[in-house]
Length: 162
Image 1 (cartoon, rainbow, N blue to C red):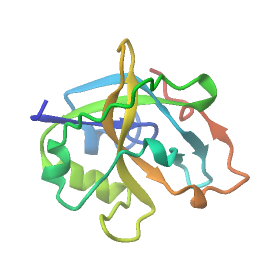
Image 2: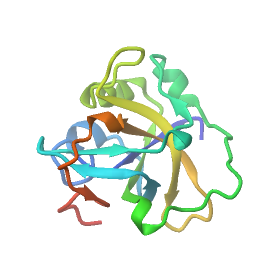
Image 3: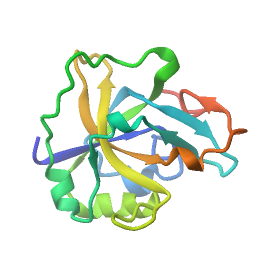
Image 4: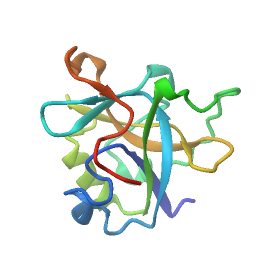
C-alpha cells in the first residue's frame, strides 16, 4: 500500500473528461465509490463538493511525499455508508507514489497548503463498490461558505457514464 495513494474524484478528472489524459494517464486502477457529502453544480463548468468536518480526518500538507505515504489506521466504529441523500458518487483512482502527480493535481484544484485556497485536500472515508468497509483516500473539497444558495445539488457529475 505504501507504493500507491488514492484519490476520490467526482468531476473533471473522471475518465473521458478533459483532464483525464493530462492527469490520469499514470493511474493504476479506478473503482466506483461513494462518499458522504454535498455536490453542487456551479456556473463555472465544474462541480464543488463539501463534506462534514467530522469526516475530514487529515488535512493535506506541503510535504506531498509525506501525504502520499500516509496509510491511516483511523477507524470510526459504526460508520456506515451514506444514505442516498447524503452520498456523492464518483471513483477512487489509485496512482503510483509520485509527488509530481499530486503536485499537478494540487495546482489544478488550486490547493496551496498553508495558504488561502479555494479547495482543500483532505483524507476522508469512501466506500468502494463491493467493499465491506471504507477506505480512507484523498479528496478535494471547498468550504461550505463558497457554495451559493442557487447552485443545484446533485449526487453525480452529469453526463459521465460508469
